[in-house]
Amino acid sequence: MKKNTKKVKNILEALPYMEKFRNKIFVFKFGGSMINDEYKRQLFINDIILLKHLNMKVVLIHGGGKHISKRLDEKGIKGEFHKGYRITTNEAMAEVEMVLSGNINKTLTLNFVNKGIDAVGLTGKDAGLIKAKQKIIDQHVDIGNVGDIIGINSNFLHMLLDQYYLPIISPIGYDDHGRTYNINADDVASAVAIALDAEKLFLISDVEGLYKDFNDKDSFISSLTLEEAKGLVQNEIIKGGMLPKLKSCINAVDQGVKAAHIVDGRMEHAVLLEIFTDSGVGTLLKGENYDTDENI
Image 1 (cartoon, rainbow, N blue to C red):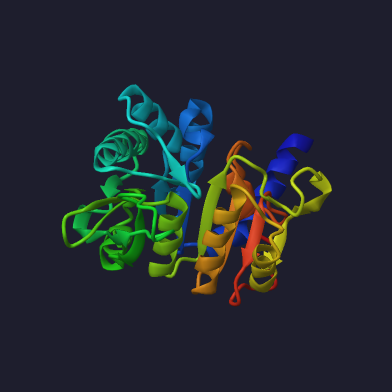
Image 2 (image 1 turned 90 degrees about the horizontal axis):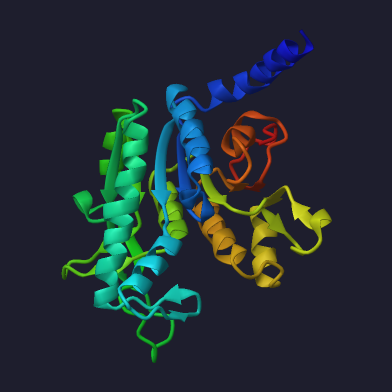
């Protein structure tokens, strides 16, 4: 009886959030070890399916760095990085596109379709979804077909969302000259959230969230304001792999997205816990329009 009572209390706690977020747009970036782990991937898919059944509008962007590295190794294509970016030659770009758009994207889309969800697998080339230009880091180093986003076809995405389709986007861009670009999936998720004026951006990671000192678990950051987040970057408190994720969140919130979340995808039903419970489970970056009476 106590167990059933707890279940009812959990439902009642979630109810206000279900009402609040009906028809709101949520953008998710899904990648890392979760793509490789069948069990965790299915948990995430089930969480997204529940959001869809609650009439939330969802866009999913995926990565696939480990799959790309494996494919390039198999093809004997040398993998080099410069300041965190994969140097992507024309030869490598063909393999990158095949892995992201032809393999991961279609497999993930089929996972949703087989569970009754109207999912549509897309690349940035479809309907001119992601227009890009070459990323320049250093003038003397050519990193090849790595892109910076210059435009998102938000009208196309709104059309799909209004019909309650689930767009699943591979982070591949294009330019007017027919060149194809490999784009950081976190950057794509941030740009899509901004273009759609999304309620929330979620970066599903394989760590709990942000720490001021990753070796000190007591330094976990549950929530922070935009100004606090900028301070963490300027003072070089956040470093390593979490820095680009934090920058993507800052970019989104700075341009109107109400909130950004970094969530540990290794935790069972982390997405639902972050959205539908008062305490949440990840790191929350609050925008200027964030409701102070919200706890998630």
